[in-house]
Length: 117
Image 1: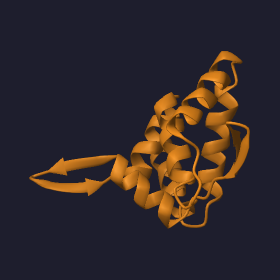
Image 2: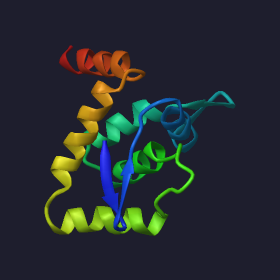
Image 3: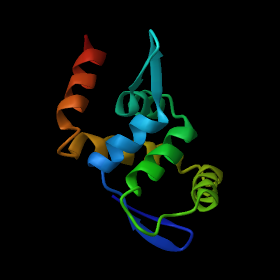
Image 4: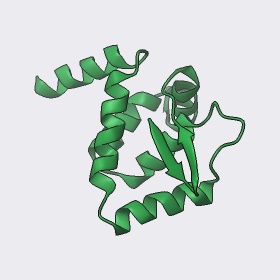
């Protein structure tokens, strides 16, 4: 998945760096132990159309790069999409990308099955 942010094109990848970054963003504490709930939380927030989820997905998807988009550029990108009423296609693009990512396919199938039950 490619996005043009701040005038520069970035390839987002949904591999181990993506998963690990999300697990550091979205954590849960249960009986004093912290657990990474990255992909699970991201999918839930994307489904709720939360723009913060787009921000975190972009941060995680570009985490493997040496030259990453700045926080400000990501915020401007999302705000511009919102002002043009283009957030819905972006949410859908992320959903599709996650469903097609080799490391996430099984988990995404499980989410869909749980939603249908």
